[in-house]
Image (cartoon, rainbow, N blue to C red; front, side):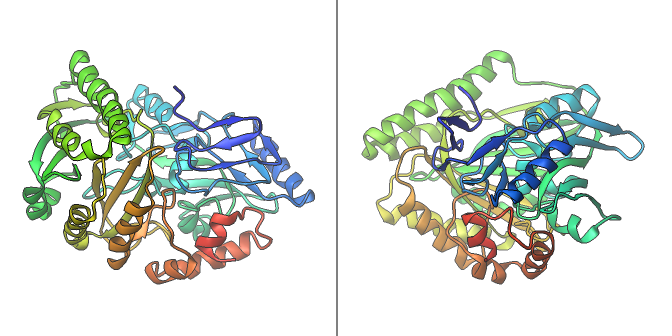
Length: 439
């Protein structure tokens, strides 16, 4: 099964299956020059332009009825600079290929999300993140980028060159231009020890500040309709490597986390009344385990059960209150939620429209399996998150607009002014960007 988005009969669909669009034409440029020509050609024909990665966004952020740029030929590592400890990579490179290539070179990103199917440009442009006390999103690890703007110019951006563009374009939503290459900070490869263990909801929430403070990377999953969570603590280790054995890895990561979980989702969809009982069993299925491995093998895991997702970033000090409100809402609502709620953190960063811009952040993500009605649950959850000045993930479902964002992002006007300068004719606009950034 493909883990990317699909296209048939000229229709492009995203991974979650909730967005589809028929572009006027699709272009697969094999070089920056070909991409520049495609952008200029679209302007001549009066068409909008959007670049699309693997379609892992649940919003229509990359959708267009104009020219759809597919960057799968713009892949691979351009340059490794061991003095500066940076790697420059083409925009269409999937994170999984970058992670494997870096490991071969004895290098690694400092932090990453839990899915690595996305392209580097798609992941960073939407603010994809993992969890970290001190280390932030993938975009916060960017040291430079190359951007094709609406008039076909190629801008090189860093803290020293086009610094105002760099501040915003690391998470640019595809609104400022098309990213063609990214330079990441890397470090010598290291080992992480992961400690996964079940914990009650009350224990996790009452001890949240300590669990966050004591671990470099802390996250947990709460199973709605239960008082149970699964926690994961990742910390750097001197070794030795002790990976999960192949039999246990298959049983827990494939059979339980994907196979049995998928079957449970099918049963839950067919008979929603069974969901609380299934949740109680699921929340106890995974036992405690500890293992030590290289970063991408610890941070990431396969996700074969298709879902749709909403995730909000709230100030870290509001996380526990928001979670307790979410649990109380689910308990009294009559909703049947078969997918766990994921909770992660990030330190404040300095990227204009980063969900962690200027504030220490906690992320709360709600999911529903693909094909089930999610609106009632997501609407109720969103009401809770926005009451805490939540900022939605740019690539996940939400109903917020430019007026709301102007209130929760102090530097929102900085971004829109830059967009006015770089794309005055809105060559990169689509309905989603019109809603979230204003016309």
